[in-house]
Length: 342
Ligand SMILES: [Zn+2]
Ligand SMILES: [Zn+2]
Image (cartoon, rainbow, N blue to C red; front, side, top):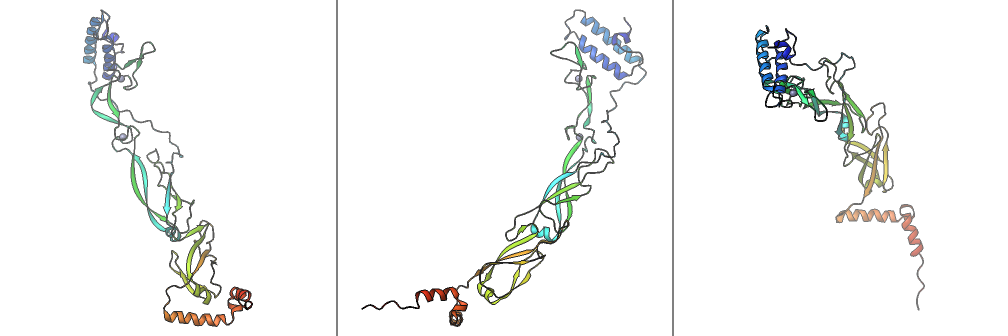
């Protein structure tokens, strides 16, 4: 019999795992079921004998244990900070005006607990590699000869497989809720940065990225923003516009009382500087613009009708001043009597 080590193509003193690997590879090649060579059976028997001999003389205890390959350690780099995470944040105008605390749901990637981030899990039992059927070699269809099996890295068997929990990425997605303090005065397009709430670093002790929230203000049934100017429409009693007086307008911080000076009962705008959307991001507070829409009274009772008639009579007595349009019309069409007919 040839030297057992030579038959297996091994240097004396190699560890048992190398002996097994070499035998598995050769046994698959020379197995008489696979190899039509008439000498295959004899050679296969010789290989098996050599294998048993070498293994028996190996001083190292046989074991299926193999060192679990560790994921490559990234080079230490001070810039290996986690990525920033971008997310939209919708606020009502009230929330943006006053500031608030918002619960923000953030997708959060973390190290896979199943594989500890390695992307592989150890198998309870060593498995024959399905791709190379244990030979550690793959016969490529177009080329010649055998190539090292990539699945098992030439071992012919596997002691680990791709982690099923993270599909090998080593990272799993989870959700977490952050309480984010929103300062007053943020507008659509502003960005709020929550330091350290972004992606975690690929390094165990690397800094997290930031969470960057892009603010978007929701449509409002009453308020409209033009920059920091806040506009709203408000119906107002036509009589109040004529007589003057106070009206209230609702603002996020509470109602604001505005004084209306006596004037025409016609639609107009009231503009109050610095009473609009609050200052923020280096910009001054905007103006409050109230669009007044006069409405006439309805459903007057007898007493109210009498009061109105009394007022109307008094105003009509000086029609050129109080009803100039009416006075002009009446002067044109009612002051001269039509020619009398015969
Ligand atoms: Zn995993
Ligand atoms: Zn394989």
